[in-house]
Length: 482
Image 1: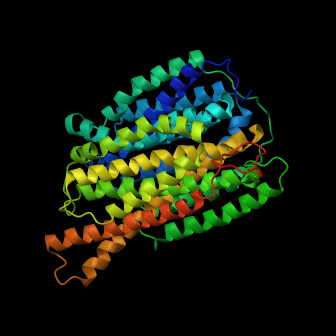
Image 2: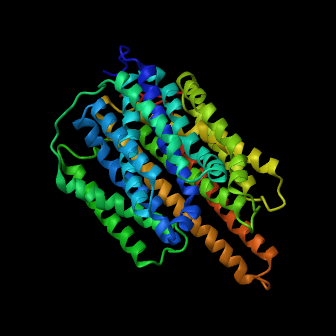
Image 3: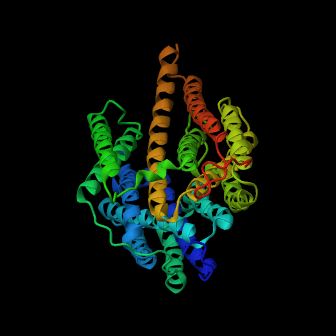
């Protein structure tokens, strides 16, 4: 069915992308409201953090099994299931009488989003021929990159003038509209194959990916740290289960997650670029707002910080479809190589900002970083998926979704640790560690270390980008100038 033009692609994409955008936006917007929720529900920071950790944990568990779900259920069945879970979760969150209700709501939202995002990628792969797939994936990139970047601004405005409940009340009608459009236009674009469910693979996958995501997410809370027995145990058990899971998949005739996707060179390159991009994106999305809002940083309000990041976020969303079209026309290398170079350069400049840096400079650097990001993530991901044969599409999208979740959790945790370590290290050597000027310098020093870490990751991506060429099915040995 690949490339079949009988589908109403505009109607299908409008529904899927609207729902995906709103789902990711509300996920990230609530993260900004955690301090407010701590006061309202009288809970600790560690308890409030579960609203984020629990969400990521569900996504980490669902992503690896999404390949199985995409094969066992029709497109419409998965769409209806995902939107039902998202909408019910959003209603419960909007009512939100206590922390327990909100936690249940977050789990339901995570289930819905965990089903929806792989479904979007898989639907694009089957609906569009390779020569038009870049533009479609670029539009998906608008959802993936613009929604989380827009979250702080939306949350800042809502919390400033309304209450955190309206993060969900405002999201609800858009989800319902997207659901109704989908009921009319979303069709079954794949064939259902009733493959056997291997319970042991599901269990190992859940423990493996869930343990790793939980461990890194918990370590990334800052107050817990890497020495926590829970973090060490979770990551260790997760890694062991993941190794056993991989070994089992290699020797199974019908694996839960078909690792033959890694026999395709451009897919491997795409995965590495996605990991690098997500780690850089999450590192900067965590640290930059913290630096802007911290009293030892620029001391801005949530709304002011969000407005500063809005131009770059908006430009990233606007450019993503355009970059996808250019990928279709010019291939990946002309976009990915300069894009990752721009990212590395902007991060190097970020590593020298201070409390005396102008707002204009920070806004311009963020714009540059977002431009580079739009040139890298979706073109590299699309290029990798393009080299897979259709029967591996569900597995390819499942792996991509999984590595994004894991890379995001790792990037966040490592960044928080580097920031905390940098601050502690600076103040340890300071003769006046309690003075406000020294605290500001410590915050700046720690932030610089994070930006340098992100720059190193982008340089690893840069080295990988030199090997990228246009991915096509069964074209591994054909040289390309793209």
